[in-house]
Amino acid sequence: MSEVTRSPVSTPGWRGWLIWTVGIAAYVLAIANRTSLGAVGVDAAERFSADAATLSLFAVVQLAVYGGMQIPVGVFLDRYGARPIITLGMILMAVGQLTMALSPSIGIAILARVLLGAGDAMVFPAVLRLVATWFPAQRGPLMVQLTGVIGQSGQLVALIPVAALLHATTWTITFGSIAGLGILFAILIFAVIRNHPPAVDADVTVNTDTGVVRVVTSAIDTGVGIRAAWAHPGTRLAFWSHFTTPFAGTAFVLLWGMPFLTAGEGLSEVEAAALLSVYVAFGMFLGPALGALSRRIPHQRSLVLVLPTVALQLIAWVAVILSPGTAPLWLLYILAIALASGGPASMIAFDHARTHNPVHRLSTATGLTNAGGFIAALIAVFLIGLAMNLQGAGTPGTYSLDAFRLAFLTQVPLWLLGATFIIIERKRTRIRMGLDPERSRRDRR
Image 1 (cartoon, one colour):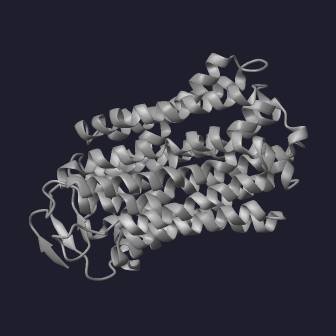
Image 2 (image 1 turned 90 degrees about the vertical axis):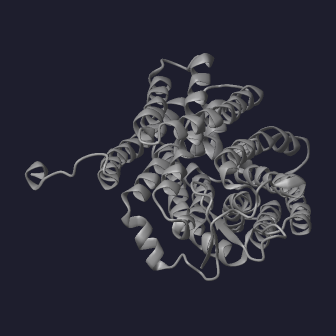
Image 3 (image 1 turned 180 degrees about the vertical axis):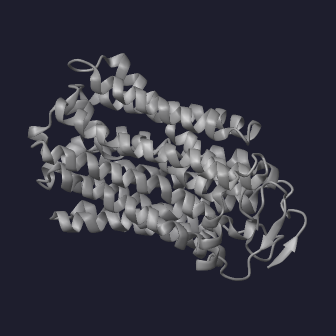
């Protein structure tokens, strides 16, 4: 790789802002695609005559593909740049939604979620790549936060317009319309987005700490790079931070939130959608605040931001589960706010990955980190569905509040496991950085 000491992008200019705007619009659509099934979970269960475990399988497969694609996407981004990758992602999601629209059976519907997960996996890393190549290094952290915050508005698109369209028309029209929108976006992306500014004759990776730009000339994210990234405790801290913070919110909004609120807590669909909208809005509001705090306390992120967020989610869920009868509406709003904190807190994991890895290994470390949250989410979604089935509450007609309560308790071991490893890897990271003394052999006994 060749190295340049100063970023070729001093100011992004109107073209940089246009490209980022199109990229962020694509990310909003990707989030809407990702959460579209969660908004109509009960309808999906009835359409495919699916029990809770099978309904969970839709989300599990989608999340598994998303997580498994993170490192390959990083390799392809380094080799081909953002434009073809994000275009392909839009096409795959469109094909997936069209398949879902026409699906006559569960097997075909699961294939649709595979395509959707693969396409979704390409969009966010590609948009971050555009930020790195079109914006000055010092603006990188802010632009990444804005990308994450604005992108989450896609959940509102799924919660309100998609559900309303389904109830006003048919399953085929609803998901076919989303597919058509995806094709239009693929054309727009290919026409507008470029990998890098005209002043740069190759795609680059930018270190947002130093401003150093490295021109990528070969595939760098090999097995050697993966092992080297994972060997650093800072990468493992990033992985477990992302594993532990967002999975409960993801499982809630991706699949189980709407059935729990309507069939379990007895809310109307309008009330449930309003509550989930608060989840999205609060997450968007909290993102910049946590991002600013993360930059100010780089050595205390885990203790001050990440672990308290995990504790808040656990306490809120336990309060709802132990509430006699249906939970009061104010407590459900507190739950939504607590779960919303997990998304912004999970972005701190990428600060860890960026801080503790050299630029040539950054996409590998980012891929490993991003996979953590989706691995936890697919486990949570599956365990909730399995717990519902084991209680004889596997179909919409048999859903009950007590069954949901026990099912959501399956999240507790994931929080405890993740928090334990956060504490362990934080200590190892601080020792590696020279902030804490290394333990002697006598101390280890």
